[in-house]
Image (cartoon, rainbow, N blue to C red; front, top):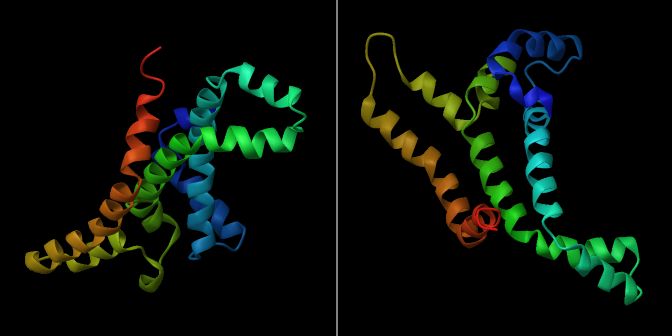
Length: 165
């Protein structure tokens, strides 16, 4: 969790060297590892705060009804955390899909680059086809908009849950 306090730019060279030494450089596994490593702390922090806001009486009532720990988790806690999970899913998809910094750090092959990193290749040193870059930007933004529209109801509910006591 303390790693989230560091700016990610500080870790560019160490992550690049570690991915080289592990044999993961220029593979999607390196990019996935970086995204998971940087995201888990934030996701745990948000879900921890959300799950602590679930009243203990709900869990106690389930215990009285004879539910075990896994049943309480699966049938009570998880359905109650649907708004928070949907909000985190939409946020993480947006962050990962639009990530440029780590993609150009751990990947070199053009075919493995995500679309946001591939847009850099469309810009030339002396001449740029701005109409093609604009079209690529719209195509790159479309999946993020679709995911947000799909989870909009849960996203707004998840962000507003802890706002008012």
